Image (cartoon, rainbow, N blue to C red; front, side, top):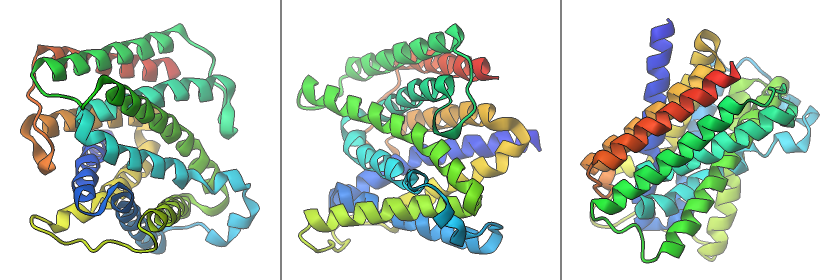
Length: 305
């Protein structure tokens, strides 16, 4: 079951990578906010079905949880929304690696100080080294993209801004995990997952209606396909496989395998231009960058054991 669990998490990582270009492609027809809203609506629907089928908690107990535990979906909504902005500019691989960097840095902070109800993990120079390697790998992936001739954006300032926002989105993704976990103590795992997705959906829906002046755009136009609307299903799949795998291989290995699967999936999508993503050919800079990032992730994970 250990091998199966690892494979499931790797598959979940690929689903995470696939969600990015799926939402980004849909956004070209309905806009970034509505694309993210549709994604979260799909994820909420899947989690609702899972909650009904296998949930063993009690959603009515949510009133006993502090308000800060209710808002995990907002962090996830920001991440998904930023990906729809960043993926066309940075490419899938660079977009996700910036998010990973934010997750690792915030993860070290949360662990060191025991924030959000987590157990404190002593500071470790090995974890800092891992974070430095991830940062170095991101630089190499960036260089690899520019060296193969693809323009990242109209200006370096735009690239820097979007990259920084993706970093912040990764920070939010790290905060989301313990937030949902704390809520799960009161209502159950699947119920907490549903609350997270549904909360993110409501926030995005409100912003979408404001931006669209009270209307939702119809999904129509040349080239529209059904697969563009299922980004949220990938997100729900990630939640599902992580919940299944954690009891067998532990949270640390889940994080490491998920990041590796996500990065590998992103590189495949970039290299072959899957999901209508802009094609970014592999070169030695990107290969080395990926290897360095993988080493950094492993060091951060091992140091937490």
